[in-house]
Image 1 (cartoon, rainbow, N blue to C red):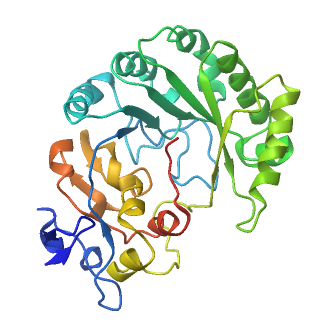
Image 2: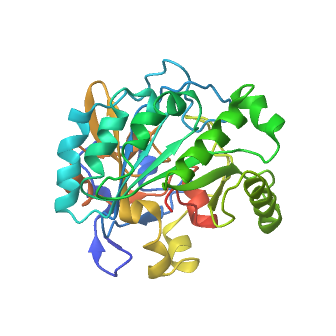
Length: 318
């Protein structure tokens, strides 16, 4: 029996009926592994699928044209989970990929979800968005607001296009301008060039770029480290139960993504609940077929991406 973040006794071994690797509960040295006990479902993420119009080598999802590691979702897939999430008190629906707008149902999905709660979409802002821009703009009067986070890896167009393809920077910037002009909230996802970077300096360079293109210098900029490709073996310190009580408080543990959000993915034609947006390459993080059941599962911090949350407070939310 272990003490959870609230001081209650829980059996970490019995957190799921699914078979898990021994690493779920213990580190390589046999120490009790750190974990998070979910306390709410504030945000529900839908992974629309790993198919993408681009094939960036750094993509944490390994996405590329035609990829089906995670299958494309349809409106019928998401509807029941939207209503289950509402019953659990969800406050926001968020969507990621791949490139969400590769899915032909994406605009319909957004239209449906935004009837109930605010929505956030992570997108590269290139051809799939520009080809559907009229339909996307038709959602500007949805009951709840829809926000878009567009990837601009670097302030330098040539560096950005080196991975994403010639002209990608200009297309993403065009989408950013159009969506902003029509009243949608927009933000930017950029890459952390150097772990020791001067964040204020880097962000200010982006704000100068935005200002040159008639965009607000109040736009949120979310910086992400290199999460590596799916299935990568990355050497990071293992997070023990002692680490979580020594370096984190009850308040900070509640701020881990897996404490207040879940993600849905479609595999082999079935929608599954995973712990968060960063661990869908590890079947140990498949929690349940329903959100209600998934909320009862403690989340082991064994994935190498968990260390970013532990050390940096990483979050895909806004």
